[in-house]
Image (spheres, rainbow, N blue to C red):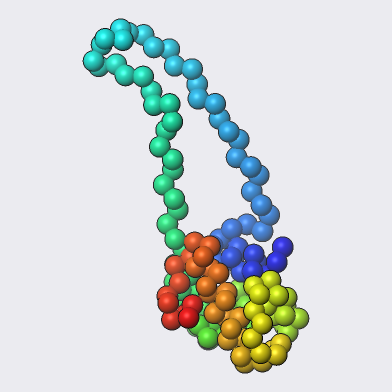
Length: 140
């Protein structure tokens, strides 16, 4: 599992192990008793409406909540290192190199301020692409 997957798991509340595939259920047979001309009787829908998509996760609210639980002393809005530490993930240079490779971030030298800023923005953009509600100032 890549570091970005761990980030999304922590923010979106997913479990570290993938969920087993959902069983496809065949609809039960319906016994239709009545006349086809009876206006009060209608057959069941063949294709039920799809479930409503889940509401986007408010990434800023989740991270702010985690920061408050931990004492509120985190600059996760600007620092990739603080963001990773807030989520109890490895924030070492090697971990950030791995994350940069995973997200295709090639700005500056590894560990440089330029790369760390680009990496933070890439994480926020990717969270938004994956169902997170992320303010524009954190993505751009």
